[in-house]
Image 1 (tube, rainbow, N blue to C red):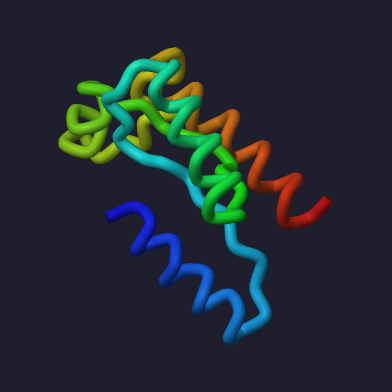
Image 2 (cartoon, rainbow, N blue to C red):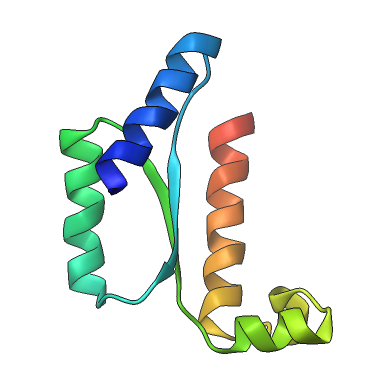
Length: 95
């Protein structure tokens, strides 16, 4: 399934001359499994993985409260990952 979705993104990128990267969201797997998945995506599909956001039960709580996770629970795993991935994405887009 992941391969099919990434291939779709690559086709869009090729058509519109866009750089394509992926961010994995709601990741439940252990970090060593995620690292293998990232390696597979980057090596076999030739698409950079810019980051991954772990599944975090505080995210639905923040949504229900109407407050972004980075404000609602700034030290939660998801909030930290969003901040780190945001910095990587900013560098990737703007250099």
